Image 1 (cartoon, helix red, strand yellow):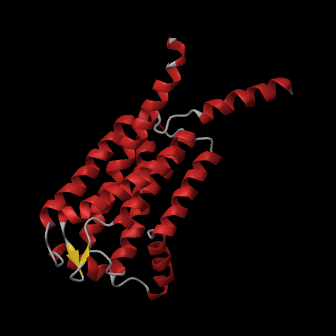
Image 2 (cartoon, helix red, strand yellow):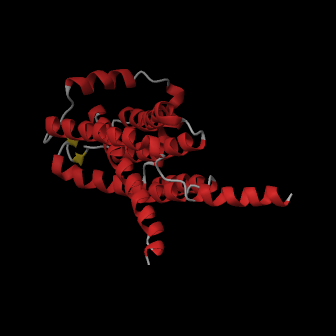
Length: 231
């Protein structure tokens, strides 16, 4: 019994100090951040100053408009999660899940990363100056960016809990981002709150911010850990 308690006590600190990004996923998530930068920057250049949809936007909008009528409640719920109160609850919920799983660094990333993603989209909107419904700045979609960022943190958490390895772990992180960002993008397009390419930019922003936020959190934690031993 005593040895079992000792073993469990030894395992708990290791879980609490697990990195936000497992070592085997550091390079893959850095690549995802580069992909995010491309997805955020290229449409920003292409559609800067526009006040209407592109051909691609029109085609995607027509597809999304054919969504089932009974999906309306889900669409409204998803949209609410991107609003200030809903987004706050989303951040708290994701951070809480990370803490429950003993991943303190990921909990920090959940808060700082999603906030930083929201800040990035806020800054980009007037710079790109793309508008929808005449007066509303639309690029990139902050709702989609926040949902992508939150889902990516959950993907990192799941990959770490499963000890998934590089290939499967990368697939889990990317799939989580695609599902979270894709659902929110669908809702925003259906509500005509954003052009489809706005949501692509939002997805890119989420991919762009979370990896460096997580890697920086790990780096700072490692620096803090070695500081006492150097005295």
